[in-house]
Image (cartoon, rainbow, N blue to C red; front, side, top):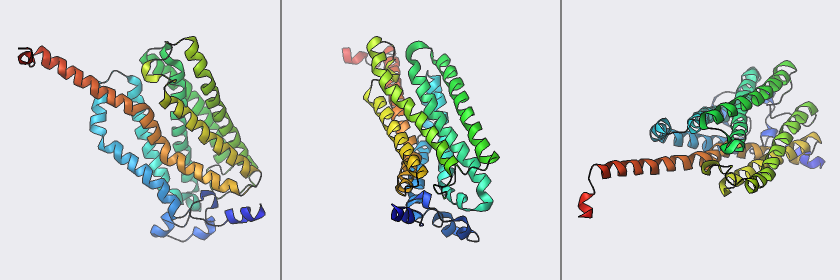
Length: 311
């Protein structure tokens, strides 16, 4: 076990927790310091490329998507499309500026950027859970208002606690080059990941019972019994469970925790937003395409374009 710990503390190219100490980065500049010195080339590429590709995809579809969202009938989809844009840009910035956490003069800026990015992603998680659990019990605008109020309160409390610990008590919650000796940091992350994992377990248990009790409770677009949504719950539980396990390993000084936490961080920041888009928004845009086609067909039929076919 001691050998694993010594290996994990060395500057490896795929482990964010094995980041180069800040004193070795001071004085360096240019592309080498930005892309290689802190975490390693492979780790940074694994973060930046998927995040950049997803933002590029959103940009390539922005005209079509904006028109569909604008003329659609769902305030909820409009809100989540805007949220995904904001969080995606924040996440890409976070991925590109990884070297900030290895630069002493950028520590405050890195903590602030990390707090905003992780809070934005947490808001997406919490708001989706809140909205999906409401089902058919509220109208579109009412569900959106209730969801954002509940999610906003939860995320605001989370942001306040993290800000107090990071900026008030100096706990390095967002600095990767922190070993297992900082028990406060790992204790806070253990509580955070434990609560999220428990919520996903409760949802997974609650959904089949609710569907069986009232099959009309879930609207078709937000039917949690559908495989895609159940897969989303399972994937998010797995991510939080693995993150919880890695934090427990770090709390107990196990070197394998560095590797596992780096892998979870890489997967979450590079794949979560595309996964969320495919699960919840892609179907909405496809449905809008079909709806517009039906509208155009009806208008052409009313105008008599297809009368010759009947003759």
